[in-house]
Length: 236
Image (cartoon, rainbow, N blue to C red; front, top):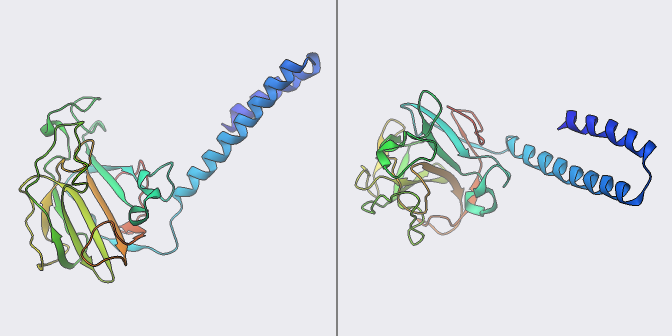
């Protein structure tokens, strides 16, 4: 963008020296305003890549394969969850194959098995106690969604002084129950496509406060995964 601005300025400067009619100058003015707006938007988006001062560190919930963050960061331009208080720092994660594709085709398709992440084991990201464990909801064929059960099959885990929500699990794959103690070595479920989701992926976020044993009810907490503050496009 900086290169484009410099090149555009040199062209505008030459044109202004040879053209002086109002329409031309107004056109340049409009272009300049649009350029400033775009630059401000870019700078605002880049701010979402900065690691917040206060974070909690979690172990990677996905460990067998290659994964990429679709939504992550602290600004709405790079993380659609950033405007929803409990999910301010949520991550949406998908799997990728050896050529960097999420599924067998660019469009994704309707076969859930074609998605790399579908059925991947999900580990507890921290040691704690299971507060909620929901299973049994059917996996949906993309692009169908379930807006009545937003999190789909999910688990809410109490870790230290915060809670972690992991959502959109595969039907009948949840391996834990309410009150059970888990460690970071325990597999708790498999990635599916249940709830308000457009394709198989794992949703994870941390929150504090709010009503006890209730999802999407507290204040969002910034998380790091194995010490990394992950944002859109990051791989692990």
